[in-house]
Amino acid sequence: MPSGPAAPAVPVPDGLVQDGPAPAGPVPAGPVPAGPPVAHAYPQRPEYAADQAFEPGSGLHWMRLSRRHPWERRIMAAVWAVPVAAVGAFVFAQGGGAAGGLLWVALVVLGTVLAWIVAELAYRSYGYAERADDLIVTHGVFVRRLIVVPYGRMQFVDVTAGLLERWMGVATVRMHTAAAATDARIPGLPAAEASLLRDRLAQKGEERSMGL
Image 1 (cartoon, rainbow, N blue to C red):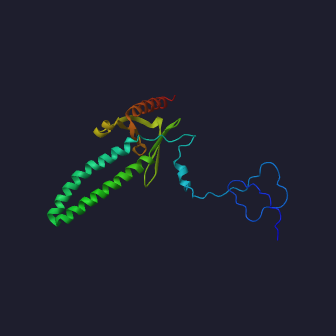
Image 2: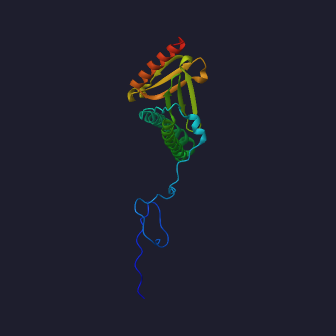
Image 3: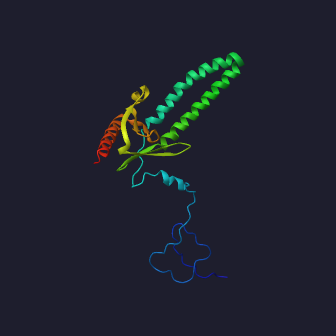
């Protein structure tokens, strides 16, 4: 038997799916009201309430280290791994044969790979921020730590750099206070940035100690 006229198409907002036949009657003109929000198809990154304790606050953002810092740690791990693997393999080969030496080398290689991974995680966990009355530093891979160093408690600030750090153009800034527990260090800063940070901290420490 002949079918009736086809029902007019109804526009559907993006993200919604219409089930069943289109409703009868004229279609209202104008924009179609948005439906309920559609749930995201991918799981979101979990947020932990404890992370709020490690935020800089006051609308500040963490200042990060130089990308050369993890590579400095990786190079140091590789430099130490070569003699340790050679000496250990020789000793184990004398007592347990070639199998013992190869097992020792494999363990050293595994330890070096883990050190490379931890170097990247440590770089991502490090951050510092200069606030009005103090400097805060956070770091830690397995155990997160946040140190608050009041400018008025700083006794002196020094900058250190080893041979590899100087070759890579980075340095470490150390803040020393009356209490050793509040001492802090910021490694892996570009040399120029470390010098400027040292001068700013020294100036703020002098101003707070004079009551300005």
